[in-house]
Amino acid sequence: MAAKRHVIVGGGTAGWNAITTIREIDGGESKIILVSDENPYSRMVLPYYLAQEIGEAHVFTAGESRLESLGVETRFGRWGAGLNPNDNKLILDDDEEIAYDDLLIATGSSPVRAPFPGADGPGVHSFWTLDQAREVAGVLKPGTRVAMIGAGFISFTILNALVKRGAVLTIVEIAPRILPRMVDDTGARIVQGWLEERGVKIKAGVEVTAIEDGPDGGKVVKLKEDVDIEADFVIMATGIKTNLDWLEGSGIEVNQGVVVNDHLRSSESNVYAAGDVAEGPDRVTAGKAVHAIEPTAMEHGRVVGANMAGVDTAYSGSLLMNIVDVLDLEIASFGSWDDAEAETVEALQADRPAYRKLLFRGGRLVGAIILGKTRDIWTTNDVGMLKGLVQTGRDLSEWKSHLKNNPFDIKRAYLATGAAGELIPQTLLGRPSVPERDIALSS
Image 1 (cartoon, rainbow, N blue to C red):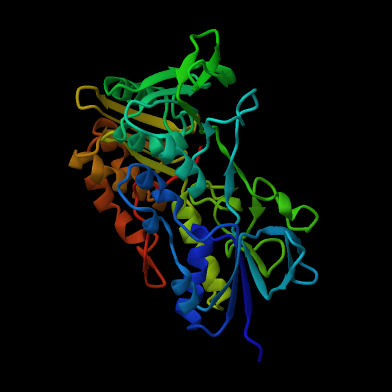
Image 2: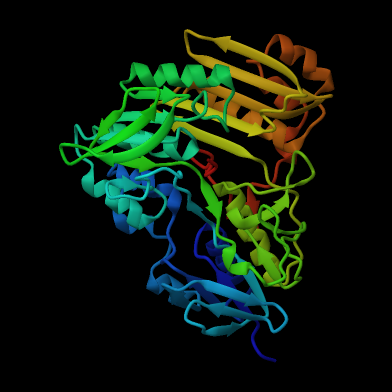
């Protein structure tokens, strides 16, 4: 009997975890073909590379020897150009066809540049790939004036590195507040004040009309109804889009992402999707959603790898979460943190600063926001416990009144309801789960 042929398209977190899971289960009996435009590396460590806390060698997930030891055949510098599910064939950009028994779509996302003049010009960088990180690292030095367009999560993952390297940073956001898809107005005010106290300039609620060349060889960010910003270079962090165009005409069902079931199978049963491109089960809403975050990509990859290797594995759903440490301020949100119809509880201790918002539907905690100093053990512990309460959906009816009056006292409700024992296991097929800091990629 011929060895099963697994084709993985995309070498990021989802694809890599699928590969290692397959090999943990089958011991090398199947054939794995990895198609990727880049050698596998971790996008989440790029900020640490920019901060010069790790060398470039530590960015890569696997070198040639590791891939060889896993028996992975590679097509690097290549990408999918089409898919023919009827014939079980993947078509590459050079027209090579690769036959498969099953296939994983894990092509991730790409940065989106805003539609104004100069957004694609020289001196304007994204920070999404290793090559782009190299470009930014190469022009950054103490005193460099950096204008960052977009104040979402992508910006905030690299903010620490820019400040550590001595950049003079100005952040521009068209929305009325920073982190518009992560925290509410109160949370945004706290974060903005924290950053401004530490020398970061914030311009929220302003529109960029163009990026032009400056008189000193730098750039000028032109603003509508505000003072222009002079910078040595610009970082564009205005969102991401899923890499799905190559599936056009394949017949695979696509909505916001590739629509998958609880086994992460697409409309073609032997074609899976994982990570940023997958529109799969949402643990809180019981619907389907695209969660372009690292924990979801890792979990997806493990589930798909198990199913590809013949171990029937259902997925209970991903949790939308954003967690980032910005200049020693921990910022986190989980689940339906912006649910306008939920019953809310808010508490603020401005002097610490410490803030949290709990969102209930009935006796269930469906969303939460938490901010506090990173070194405050109260913050660190409660981030994990609030995540657990949202993720498990435990009935908090008996504790709801207590939490309303004491929203900073999470531990007793967490322990009493047994949420810790119901969480997604900390190991899936024997592997540890992901760290929960700087994990999200949502924009």
